[in-house]
Length: 619
Image: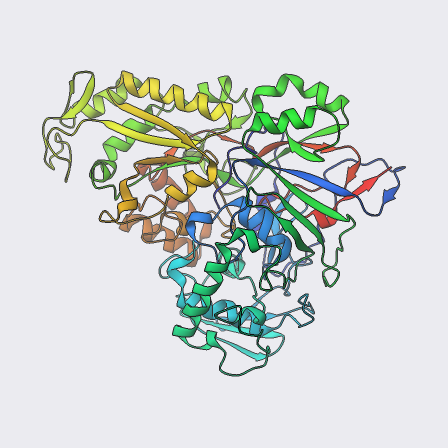
């Protein structure tokens, strides 16, 4: 998922070996995530009730409620910190601060693989929807039917992968779902990156208008059972999700199986949740309310927090205000870094009608990468509290996935190297801007499709609200200018940037964007294993820049089926280090969280899922 830039401002003051647990057998037992990363005194008394206020990232308010989410809304603030509170995925990931399958909080028992790993059997636990109906295998079938018929609308869709790799699916009884796969897959990969995408949907949603009564879960011939019907249902639900003003009052969205229900919601992004009294899970909310507060700027959030009136229970400390760490601690906050399994980058539009052919040239991407001074940005703008990104495989938290190539920089900061790459490929400085003088496809020419006279005047839009991001982009603009590349910087809200950074075709009016930086990169969820299919597979739903490489497709596919998964992952990441499908930039932790010392039960999920049902106040 796309991460917001606003909360992604934390210090790397420690790492965990959590991600190593991803390689464990999917059927291993897991404990509930009730353990807390917040140290609460053993003498503190737990208080029932109370309202906790959580600060959203700047400009990153939730704005899409339907779990079958398109790429334009596929973000942490929608999936991990909004939808999941109400609609539980089939499988929950993260045990406390560890990146592993949490069988205790999952709606189903660990999947069972048989028939040479071509048959997957899932047994559901006993959960209820808030309308009194049971969560059954039919709800999983409902999700699958909608996904099959509308897969191009799903941001996690990778052609050839889920649901294409499922030959058939069935519900032999109310608690069992069986998938027949088209070949043998790694059980770890299929669980972490395919089954992880399923969110059972209530049959009350299986309709095409609000005037229709909610259907009986056992009714025959419901709309989702045909392709045309499933498309009509999706169209209806997507239209309802576009009407933010009705989120708290809709008879659709009020049917939940998660621990929380939405009591009120503003189009600005303020969300007030109350406990779902019908929640069947093992951890019932202790709080009486959980409130998410929107902010347009990180500085605005911090001004409210340091006022010291308790208006924010769980906020964040911007890097630019690290000098005030002691002060906020004196106000009764604990400083707790939130480390996520992800990496940071911005995207180029390979289908832009003007600059797309140039973005497809490796030498040009190398030139752009040489202008990112990761060590200096980390030291100067992020105060040493970040790690570099050299590939799609994360360096933090500590994990067994990143190999030596992902830990070293093949394209270090060098303005001269960037200029040499351009001049050796047919560009010449004209009026201070590099311009293509030698079009063509030879090794010393500009490249296929790059026209003579094309001047390097590029647009780069980035997410507003975060000082360190603004500083990074200004530094990049300055370096690029010295290399003869004119970067026209603009800023917009996080939600605007991720909406603009959408896959497109050259003929579409929306395809004029050139480079977009939402300044949060990617967090590996709901695809929890960093094999990159949904990001870089040709035609994938989250391949925002439309990068296409047959070699990358082959390497990605090998990570799904290889008998030597680490070797396959190494081959994939080593290719992506050198090929630069995106422009890599430093990756800070997700947040320097500031948690009230009166709030217990807080865990910071490595997949960035919020679990306020675990929280409680103490006195």
